[in-house]
Length: 100
Image (cartoon, rainbow, N blue to C red):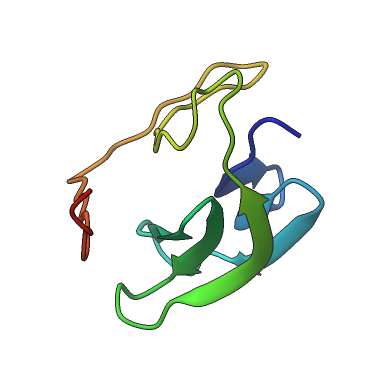
């Protein structure tokens, strides 16, 4: 797999957290927080329904130079009937970077 993600899936039954091969809880409200945690060439994807308590989706992603040229966080919306996504903010924290 060259890329994977975590997000919100909307069906006739409502909206829920989803990822390839898995699904999380139904959304109780309009907001969801998504987070990627990176160590070297590995990433873990997490989600939160309140912005404070993040739960690991159980996805361990190996980042490699391929279609997406490594790790590129993205927000997108797609589906057979169109759709929309409303993003209030994106924060990218480089964390502790070691000098070469």
